[in-house]
Image (cartoon, rainbow, N blue to C red; front, top):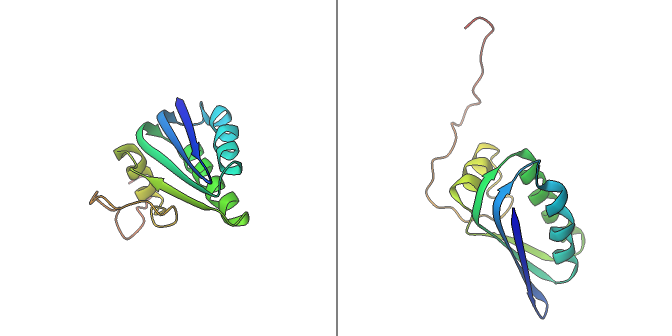
Length: 117
């Protein structure tokens, strides 16, 4: 996982490359929240994220929550296919203001399994 942070005045941009998983969450969290603390508007570029799991989703939701609490703006820009798939699975693209790219949406009904089926 690689993270680059740039700030210009009140605006900041975070570029995340590699994985956003449980294995990188403890390194990513302070950097992401630190970048948010240093600016009024933050854009997270996720175009180079290769893998995301629930820990990555939790980090994005935490950043969004902290931005709202502080009256700041946070935007997820250019999510990679890996990010889009996970956000679609959890139906969170709209919550994170993620641009839609025409990727398939999950089924409208949850998938359930029966024991022994």
